[in-house]
Each structure stands twice: as structure tokens, then as C-alpha cells.
Image 1: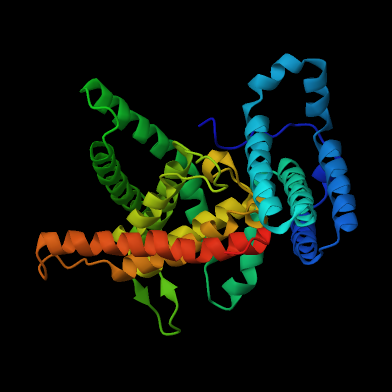
Image 2: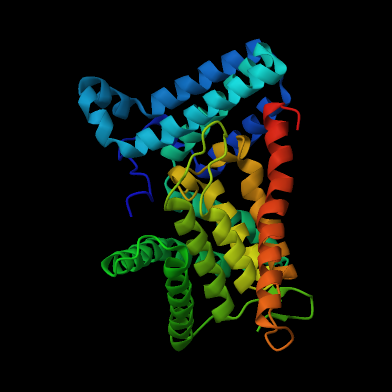
Length: 216
Length: 158
């Protein structure tokens, strides 16, 4: 699946070396803090600082784009990560400018840019596996009190990640089969087989897990 | 079947656990397939809402909510599971965060309102009821959380 895991660069930056828990905590604190501040100057400084963080993390990528600008089109993950959110932000700030004036729009725009770039930098510098490990560690205290089972949550994560590409392929199979029969994107002709096959797969998978010892 | 042990905790069978995970994956697939960005509205419209409705109609209320909770956590952790292959904390600070969080109660409400007992009603009545449940939970509940969030983040008045 191309859309799934955004290709992580093997390159190391200072942010790659921080622990995932610290990065997430920092992002959370800054995110909350910035929402509370309404000051334009503070917001501008925050946006510049987080832009600096993002540039420092993505420097190898930026440098390669500057050297070979024509490669930008092939970097779809970068384009998707940047273009679409910024388009949304632009439209949004025009809305706010219309309703609440330019200062308010600028504050919101700068705040969202700051948060967006910071989050993108953290995401680019943290592998998904490390994020998962943080989630599991956060669940540990709840596990000890008997509220959730961290290992079951981890299994659900695993199943979900593994089956996303499988279901996407299943969707494309069904669509091609419908095209071959001359039906073009009829919703019911697509959805019914999709659901039936998904539920069948559920039974098969559950049986397979049980046959191998099942859940404790 | 879903059982609750003495402490009242939900304990899932293998079948249920797999079903929850698979519906999460289904919502992800529906989110990724064809994003239709509407002009002038900063919230992308996708088949994702359909995924929420289907999870609600085919799972029990608690399992439906759990399935969508798993989806939100996947998004929070930074997997590109949201429309346009987005993901991560930035989305939740942004304008669409409330809609995504609204999926959890949305799926719960769909499932809660949906009719499952085939012997009780005619099929027409059941279709009508389930359609109503899907629209109420999947659209109204999601928007009831998403729109105030949008207003809060942007400072727009509703």
C-alpha cells in the first residue's frame, strides 16, 4: 500500500535520538499551551521556531529537493503531508478573516502552522513501532488495575495494521471484477461483497488464532 | 459472546477482538480510497462516515465504540489513516479533529439505535430504522461534536 507508512528516511537527526515518550509529551504540552495563547507576537515566534525544528529534521530531504527540483513530483508522501493541510489552513484563515478580522486569522494561521510543523517533525523522526511501544507503556498502569489488557490491545493494533493493505487489495479486486462485468462503481455492487468478504475473513482469522492456542 | 467478569470489565472473545480490529481496518480503507475535497469547506468528505455507520450497524455498541477508538489511536500515533493519508497529533489540533473524535460516540449511537432482531419487525421497518440510526449516529452525532470543535479551534461563531 503506497499511502500507508510514509517512507522514513534512514538519516538521523537530533530529534531521532530523543525518546519517543519525551517527544510526544513535548508535543502535547506545546499543543495545549499554544491553544491557550492569543498573542500574535508569541505565535509568530512559535511558528518560526517550529519551522526551524522541521527544517532541521527534514534537512536531507529539503537539500535533495533543492538540488533536483524536478524530483519534487515523485515525493508524493511529502506533497501529501504538506500541500493538503496548508491548503486547508489557507481556506480556513480566509474564513476567519472574513468573520473575525485579520488579526484573529493570523493568530490562528500561525498557531496551526506551528503545531502542524512540530507534529510533522516528530512524526518524521519517530518510527511507528516506537509510537506503539509508547501506547503500550501508557496502558501498563491500566493493565495492572485490570481495566484493559495491554497485550490484547497490541494484538488488535497488529491485526489492524496487517489487514489494512489486505482490505485495500480486496476492495480493488472487487472493483475490477465489477468493471469487468460492465458495472461502474455501483455502491451496492461494491459494498455488499466487501462486507461479506470482510466478515468471512474475520471468522477465518479468529479460527486461526484459536487453533494456535487462542487468547489467554 | 461479550462477557463481563465480576469487576464489570469487558472481556472479548477472539472472534470479537478480530472483528473490532477488522472494522477499524475497514474504516481506514474507506478513509483512504477516494477523498472528495469539497470546495470552500475545510473538512474533506469521504466514505469514512460510511465505515462508521457500518461498524455501528454490524457490531454491538461497545465493540463499535472500541473499534473507532482504535482508529483514533492509530491516527493519534501518526499512522496516515485519515483521508489524504494524513495522521498525527496535528490533525487533532486542526479543524477536523472533532469530527474524528466524534466517530467514537457516533458509532456507539448507531449501534445502540439499530434494530437487529429480524423476527420482530418487517424488513421494510427494519431498513427504515437502521437507516435512521445510521444517519442520526453517523452524521448528526459526529457533527454535533465536530462543528463546535471547528468553531473552538478557529474562533468562528457557529
